[in-house]
Length: 260
Image (cartoon, rainbow, N blue to C red; front, side, top):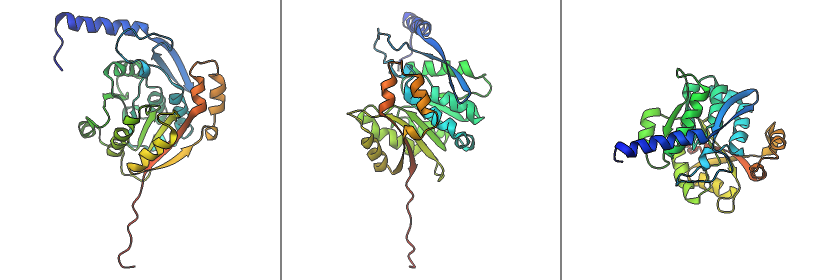
């Protein structure tokens, strides 16, 4: 990428300031853990080529955060927590506050303009000394470089990021590369069922890459029904009716005893 010069650089800075002023602030609290979030208005019209999807808070992020916070000991015991496609960062921020080691959390996205918002939300919730990292990561592309810098993770999280069929393979191969080899290591995904990426395709893609999938129905997550009622007026609410949480772990190869 060429370095920006003169008016081009100033124009990008002005656009960044304009976008910051455009964001709205909200507070999200789950299980007595609260974060301040800036997001793009849900009904805002896109006036440029930037995709604003990742700059909004979607129900899947709060559902997965609720599940992890219900089992906060998992986050506390994890050596390294990674969020893929963090967007506004709700899940990663809440988990970072609950785990007690926010500096061990790395929040990523594959869009630079979205990372600008992720970084702003991190700064709104944590002091400079001991805050989650914010890093660019494009699935299937700069994974090796990213791994050299951050190593592997015991807990990987992703919320409603698999809405394109072509994203399934690079997503799971990236997770396989970055997830630790510990038996307890896991990937948690909250996914909205869509005709072009239904739940079964997510399970199948994970299995093809060497993962075992366990379904976690929403009705089994304490507090999810109350969350659903509280957000009934939100235009994004119907997505909750089509949502599922998946837990993926690496399949273990059982070697046969040659002496038997």
